[in-house]
Length: 178
Image (cartoon, rainbow, N blue to C red; front, side):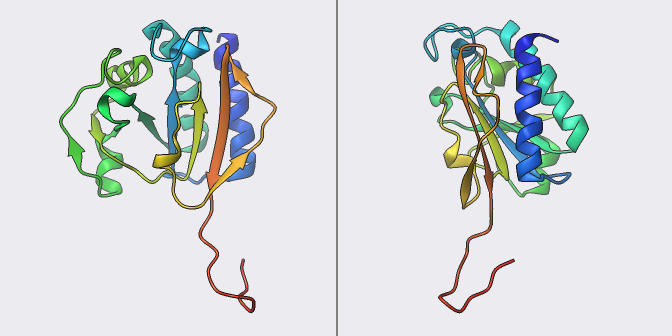
């Protein structure tokens, strides 16, 4: 494992401590491999960097049973790559695009090549997420997103943030919540 992979796994484990994700919950992943390498987002991504990160994501998936969802870049309107099984379980409609490094991003391209039966969907409502390199995953989180603080603030040279979600609190002054 590389330092990137170890840092990623540490951050994801700390996210899990606070998010308590269950088997089958969705983790949205936004990644700029360019930023991990210390370059400008969208300018220097590599499949090699994505491969190192993939190790951490799949290790976390094996530990927790979460479903991985990879946000593509702006050139595919931040569409999301998932396994067909996830799309079917959550009634997500596939769209017709294959993520490549120049339109989707290196992480999405690598994940597409590694997945068993990948499909791309336009949107998703994930239970938690990780954003490596300020890719803005918020549009794919369930309401209400809650920031999660971990000891891992960077992966490589990329700024990293985490979020979990919770149900909306509705009612008034007399309402009670769990």
